[in-house]
Image 1 (cartoon, rainbow, N blue to C red):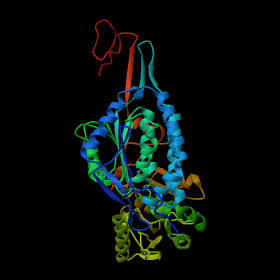
Image 2: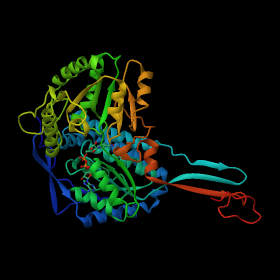
Image 3: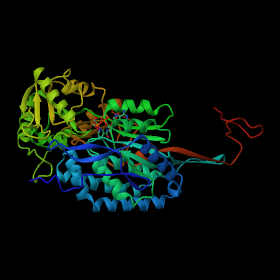
Image 4: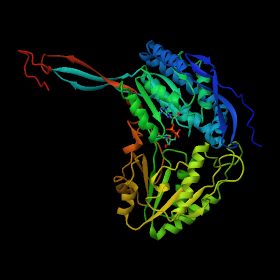
Length: 493
Ligand code: NAD
């Protein structure tokens, strides 16, 4: 039996290195039971202001200048997270629904990211070194970063901002989703004695707390991960005082299968890249395009895979797929599937909510759909996958690109060069060949079109949380912006 009562039911915010309780709380539902199992603090505007002031004060210390201090703090954060991975991962599973292994893995990945960013070298670029001048470009931290996060992989998402923001010399106020605040609050509690007071503040509450953060005058950067609709609002709220904004938004990733694959082999690989975390991953496969002649073979193999999945409470042994995280999202997935069926979709596997408590939905494979149905056109963010046939590759590319989303896409073939030529033509921040949702630390992760603004990943994250800082050391009077009489030619512009 799953034990949902092992943990404390109250959690506190972290502001200026202190535990902070609130007057009001919000109930946190375990999606596997549909019941509230813990209360999270609801941050007030005054408390948010205190968090911002603490973060600003902490930024104005040695922290921003002392890379070795930050590196050592980040390494200790990594060790602390690794040591607490089981405890925090378990709560992540209880609030999010993912299988326990994934919950624990998400905390370990966060630890790994702290280490990776601690070790990251951020070179100073020498852009001119001649008789006229020595010109060097380094990166300068922005100040306080307001980090607003979604519910799909809470701890990883939070640390995706905290680690590079720290590496760059910033301080952070982070707000997890109201659906999954607990594991991130635990990270705040865990790191209270590890990081200098005020460098990491963790607040929780509803959507309005996110809005206050983007409107607050202190943060100089906003790191937002979430939906396109909210991302647009965040961009607008952050505009009046020109905060730097990093938006990592939703996707509707297409996978294009070429005609030279082995249907069973490719289906096996495609399946978990679509259904991992019950489809609640920004860069999961959300539509598959398959050549007409092998469409039914690939669908049959996907259907067999879907029917074999063990769905259940993520705390239970052997569970491969948990519930949908929250009631509105569960209702949305139900609605999208029902609408698709109304539009003529054929349910090849699943298609229904699973009886009993919690927000469980069967792994669902649908055919008979085309563009124009919301399940194809929109991000479903759940365990329901349309598999569409195509007759020409041109048509598949056009359909894959025929969306306002542009997060990821993939091409599957026994000839990687042939697939890469198709990948070149896909309008996505990342186009994979024979995989999907794989991340390389050296590469920018960035959505094109409405899937994002700016990039994260490795040094690109550091760039997002810094401004360039140019030091121009003159060696002669030339090259002045304003002509200096007798100093030679100017290239004033
Ligand atoms: P959401 O946009 O509903 O909420 C995200 C966060 O924004 C939450 O913390 C929420 O409280 C806050 N928020 C809501 N309204 C706000 C406002 N007006 N101002 C400021 N903050 C506000 O997204 P979600 O449903 O939590 O997450 C799912 C979405 O996140 C999906 O679209 C998914 O693709 C996307 N996502 C993207 C990435 C990526 O890296 N591109 C990663 C994970 C998830």
